[in-house]
Length: 80
View 1: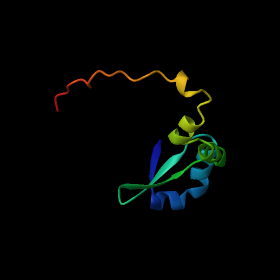
View 2 (view 1 turned 45 degrees about the horizontal axis):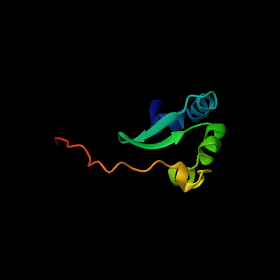
View 3 (view 1 turned 90 degrees about the horizontal axis):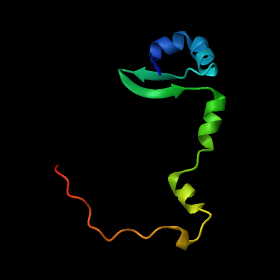
């Protein structure tokens, strides 16, 4: 994704929006920090309708018996 400084985005906002509509969103930065994203309205609407992980789990259509029982084995050892 293309990064644009805020001052440049202001100067070329119409072009930034045109690119977003064509499927090329842009990250707007201010003082080197990512602050915002310009994306098409269609992409924004798609993001609005993505369910959370919790909602996906809650919508599981099966019964408790459909979920396999967890193993009683201890977790594997890891080196940190």
